[in-house]
Image (cartoon, rainbow, N blue to C red; front, side):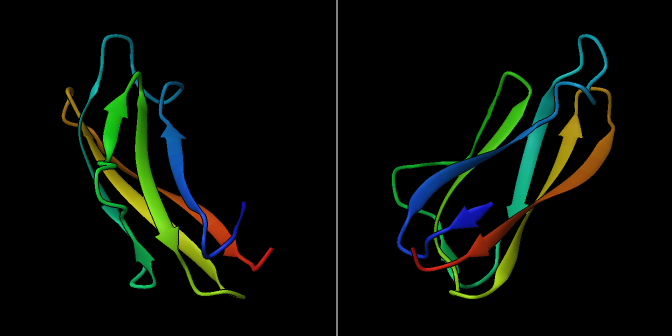
Length: 89
């Protein structure tokens, strides 16, 4: 995905196809690059099998990964990374 460094947007990872029937995500911890910030008043969320983060910033011309680590109600753990290409638009 391409992101402008001035954009303040939400990004989600959909875990629905990975979760077993009746299993839910009980925690999600995001790791983001130092050049990104989390806008105040827009907390990370877990809803309907998705983990959601709001970010702004990023270094123009660079590709950055937003990594999320989840733990499920069944005790399973997994990581996913969203890759963003930061470009001035």
